[in-house]
Image (spheres, rainbow, N blue to C red):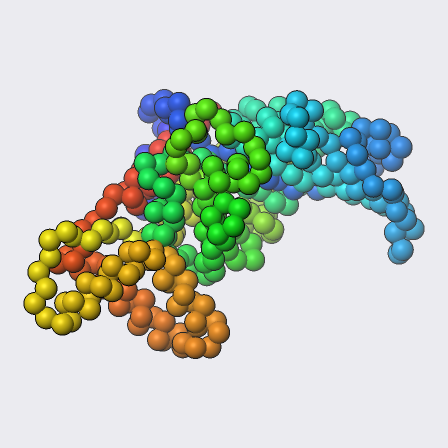
Length: 351
């Protein structure tokens, strides 16, 4: 199936327009949280199925046993990678929750292509390992992400991503140099996947070695039914074609909801005739060196600490936009055009 898209519209074609190249992939599921109300699970049988578990505890109010444990991807040496956490309460009805990275559980990492058919196999593998049918389990959290191989360092793209309406922008420099946009229900995150692999001590696949890999994820953290207009999203829904089409659209649209600088670089030959031109020139140099995103973060932090008012921040952001779009001082670079193209291509094909 292919999509013809613009920022305003899209429609689906019955066949894929082209094959994705070997270094491209459609977005795939990563972290999930499944919740199932059921009956008939014998806690002794469940404990045998788990690779590890804590001592079962008796609930103070319910008087029923609760156990926390996990199952692991048995094909990888690092058992912490691919671990699914299990929580079971022997109440009425019984409550079972399963959480973790579906891709890492299935493959041992989230660098491979977890297609719709492989998603089905992963859910079936989970069900088999626990001897519980998880297909009707409700999805309470869902992450969708893709690894984008870029021409330039990840930070050059991240610095051009500004704001999303009704979401808070933040950065985390440790671990994987991440840029977040989040509210109480969703998170958009773009981070350096190679740095993330190094931090986790995961082997970097040959395809990614020596390359710039920007991972873009959309995370639905809670109230998933509300976010999908009242639909009940179950584990079985994840590999249904209509839902996968819908969540691909959400992934793409969430990226394009980010206000983005087209990007700029300083012109090598400029004419400076007035003191005001000189000030603008050095202001543009400073913004370029710090990164537009970091400058905007500084303004937002000043507003949160009470040093600046909302109106002052608005005016300063407008001035930054004016400086970075002055044709006499700067010229466009192609970072955002490249990233836009990559995101669009990721949803042109799916399997």
